Image (tube, rainbow, N blue to C red; front, top):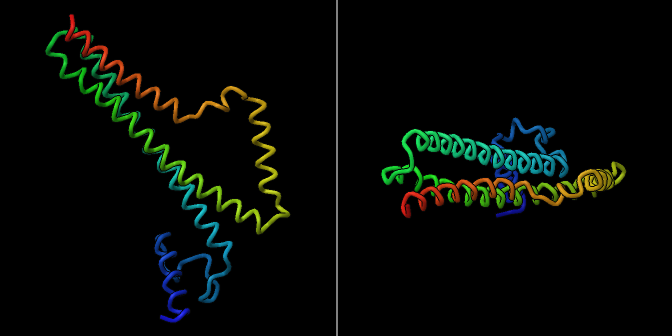
Length: 181
């Protein structure tokens, strides 16, 4: 394989990763790649979109679990804590554990995409030092830390994990109450 065919193959693979044909790619001018910055920007956009998708999945899963938990608690309130209600309380425990693990996995995927986007942003910033991209972000981050010193250290994924852990503990406590009383 010669260098041109390898280059063409890699270009086609990159474009197909964005779901585009070589003809419709905005970073092509007259049949050739415009420049590396277009590729970096497309990759950055792709990772940011993937991060938003992960957050959307987490929100959807959490909403479903909360609705199921509310329905289960309402059913328990009507029927009372009796042995037959273990069919409601044990799945609550399972949903809480599943939600906890899913939130941890969503955090891992989000961290991957954010890390990739951050690396690409730095690479773009190094190509355009006159824009002072990193300096502006550092200044904004410093201001944010000063305005919210305690909340800044609280990671949002820990809030979601804590919520799902509370759901699991509620399911376990209700199951334990039914079994041991």
